[in-house]
Image (cartoon, rainbow, N blue to C red; front, side, top):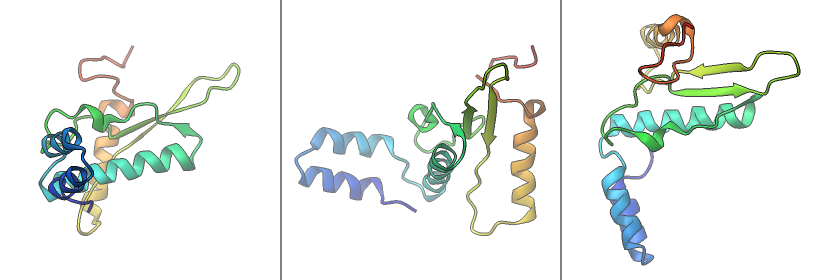
Length: 130
C-alpha cells in the first residue's frame, strides 16, 4: 500500500507546494481497495515497460473517471517493436489486488483477458474485429 493522500499532501504543504497538495487531495484515491488496485497497475506497467520487449506508451491511471473507481478495460497494453515485414505485436495485462491469490482470482483475470476475443480493446466503443 502506498502513502495516504493526506500524508503526501501534508509533506507537499510543508515544502511550500500548496497547489500540488490540493491536487493530491482531490485526485488520489482514499480507500484501500482502489489504492491497492492502482498500485498493481503501476507495478505491472513498470515491469512490462522495463523487463520485457514491449513498450507501454499510455499510462492509463492519468485518465481515471473518479479517484475511487477502478479503470475500465485492459489494465496495461504494451506494444512490441515491429521488425521489418512483421506485424506489430501487443501484450495486454490484467492486474488483481487481493489478500490471497486464489484459483478464482486467476480465473477472473483469465476471463478478463479473453474478453473481446482476446483482442486489445482500443476504446470502449471501438470494434476491433475488423
